[in-house]
Length: 443
Image 1 (spheres, rainbow, N blue to C red):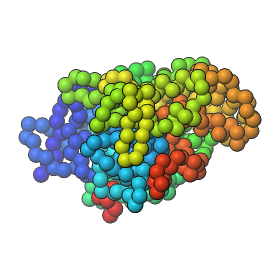
Image 2: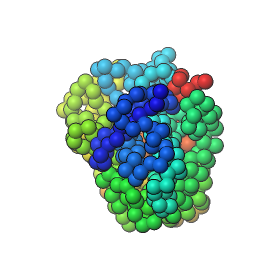
Image 3: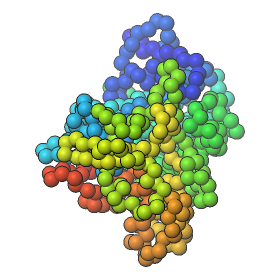
Image 4: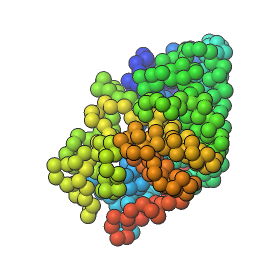
């Protein structure tokens, strides 16, 4: 039986290539549809239109299960509570209530993992297709490869962020012969870094324009040169995760880092109300009930007076309570259901720069970078000890407030061995180190 994919006319982020919807775990089911072309036909002499449809599906699929991903890392990282009238596991399993543990066979584990690997499968098909067609120029080929490998690396990084020492799979091309789970986080990060480097090399040889269009979330980064800066920004994030701080500084020079630039400059997921498109899954209206995200009380209590980043939360008319947890503030980063969500932006790059300078001993330059963040957030310049230990504390504090609800706090505290500093709000709760990989992958 052949596997079929649907052809889509290109509209940025409206609709998914069907292959992105056919996956269970890392596999593709056979879905016969004589009205649509087969995957086999795309894998041989694909046209630019065929390849562009794969690009559309790849970018669109990156947004699937984002809400669950951010709830996972944000709740475990004590950035927010996720109160749900329909799903108690947000306040039990994720917070380790009583005897609760993280489940390897439920939605919060399998949905984000599966969504990321659906995109990985799309990128694998795109790579195979562009390497097996005579209908594109060599520059176009390099462009598709640079795009595909960058997005593939990013998707794998998100899964590794959750599973950590439980690992991820890199080799998923053959669903009947999956590669091993790479359980060493540093080895996995090394492979992700190498993939980003391969992609960057492709992008250098991709000419001045892409043969495909990207959504408005890539505005300014929708050429080989611009997309390569995005790639190098992701690589800098990976470098600090690997504790390769000198390398991070080199990568930042090739990224879109701008110490004098806007904090919000960067690359984003975008959403719309157009038919077939997606809404921002991180948005809930102020004072919502039933399904809400409540800022952890510590975010406000620990803030420095005058910090403008407190606008990321809003005071509720009445506190929200569930499972012996109470909060007075809504998470309020997004004011509409079509607001963009950052993938990576300049404020993070400035903080990566500060961290790398701390770790390479340039404490004065690190302090100056941290002061850019402080002054841009309505705070006076840093006035405490200029030591490596003190500046690490300050850097993590600024990351906590600058990157709130962007998926970083839990990772930061874990990589600095500070998970024991995250608050325990109920007796018997736990702070998890990692999520299990789905039970379907334990083969």
